[in-house]
Amino acid sequence: MTRIGRADLAADREAAAALLRAGKLVAFPTETVYGLGADATNGAAVAAIFAAKQRPAFNPLIAHLAAVDAVGEFAVWNDAARALAQAFWPGALTLVLPRRDDCAIALIASAGLDSVALRVPSHPDAHALLASVDRPIAAPSANRSGRISPTTAAHVRDELGEDVDMILDGGPCEIGLESTVVGFRNDQPVLLRPGGIAMEQLEAVTGALEMVEEGAAPSSPGQLASHYAPAKPLRLNATEAVGDEILMGFGTAFDPATNLSPAGDLIEAAANLFALLRRLDRAPGRGIAVAPIPETGLGRAINDRLRRAAAPRS
Ligand code: TXA
Ligand code: MG
Image (cartoon, rainbow, N blue to C red; front, side, top):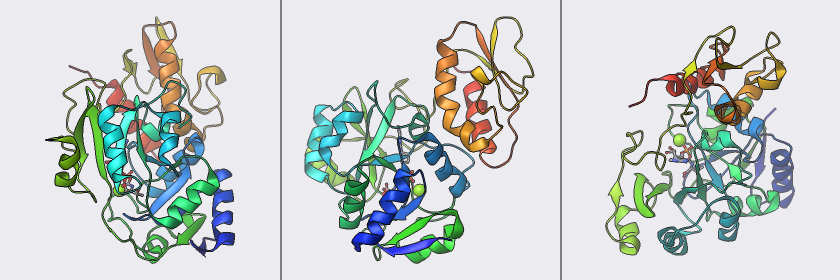
């Protein structure tokens, strides 16, 4: 049963923090919209977010932090990012920065990309929860895929009901619009998504900003890539490796050593997808043969990513 607690009550907050540490899903208020949170360092917990949202694809998620100081643990700063953080954090701004090599945020939270989206929210209840969990919390808006973002706890309950373990009720969100997302190309800021902080406000700090439409093709490969693609060619729905291929399995019929989920569990498979793709991409062999993944539940998002990764590139 979904528990609804008051975000400003210490006991409810501690219960929510304990659930998050245990890999459960907790919806919580921020100044922009309610987020559907999970421990960002726990791949299976992050995969459960996608399952609850019934999202047919893995979009990279924002990892929320209690303090600006924590950014350096996960990502690499640049001067423009520092200036923006100084001006707008805590607040409705998300910065997409290069991941550190030792970044503890699960790859599925970044959809396999070399970058990671970070935000330090200003909402006091969000801040108190993040400080209590003391881990980055991945959170997209707490709605089903394709629906509008929730700005009250009741919206979250109506949308997600039993698919979330707890909802922290902090009243209506002040801004009611998602955060502004800024990425960087050669350390120059690029607006990736308009949001709660206006472009004019950002430009007062950074000078003229370039704007990139969400989902647009990256003009600088690797930097703003909208999805991860391995260097090796992928062959989907394969039952065995042929020639110089290495096989990525799924389920009991395949070698557990290179298997998305030997048990055939789609949440486990999602949590392992990007890390295993990277591992096989670096392993010997000229191609990756991928076992069939059922087109149900998270299998849809896994297959979406695999199809994109298998598509010919220019
Ligand atoms: O206000 C908000 O931002 C809310 C609250 C809960 O914080 N969260 C939210 O998350 O709207 P979500 O997952 O719905 O949106 C995340 C946005 C998407 O537009 C995504 O494409 C972008 O951030 N994003 C995340 N990581 C990225 C990355 N590595 N590269 C490019 N874009 C990224
Ligand atoms: Mg959203």
